[in-house]
Length: 204
Ligand code: CDP
Ligand code: ZN
Image (cartoon, rainbow, N blue to C red; front, top):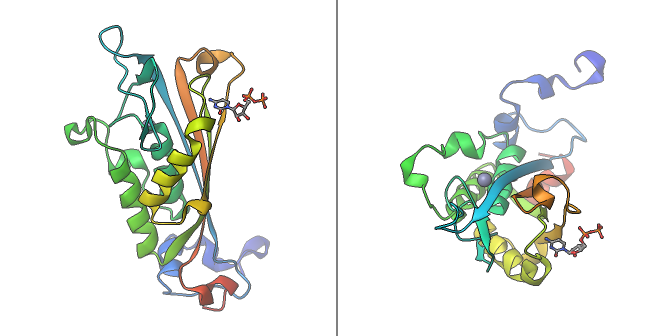
């Protein structure tokens, strides 16, 4: 044990990689779970020619809307936040480090490729997705009518069953940029557990 009663193991710089590859194992009783958090925000603009908004796509699902996101790739803030939650859970570099937004190869890119890369890295660490929970904050469009299709698409990209994915919408009560329809904001949390059940109780 280190100072303040924390296992020395936790302070090793290579902790996530070593532990999750089974290199040094878990301290007895230490949970093998990993929690990840992802956040993203994109400005929304009118579609061309009035503005520079891209076609509105959320969670990989195209949605009819008068405005669309500005920014990196196809501007899918939900898939970006899912990607960052998964990468964050394993201590990997974030989406902007892996896929720089000034790289012309990513201009207009389907953001599903970012999720797939994050999922590949999660599996390579011997982990699997227990669940993904997302909150999309925008004044319009309503997310509820599209939630099932979005969950199905995320589950497909994440290679997990759809009951492990949840997406819900909130307004911003008309205030600030999000409430005025000038931006969309997304928060995602995810829980990863060992793909091998034996590791769940900390016994390996
Ligand atoms: O009533 P409260 O202030 O908690 O929430 P709200 O932001 O007014 O949203 C009410 C409900 O509308 C949410 O609980 C969602 O079910 C739905 N909603 C949605 O589907 N999509 C949005 N962009 C915003 C809200
Ligand atoms: Zn983004």
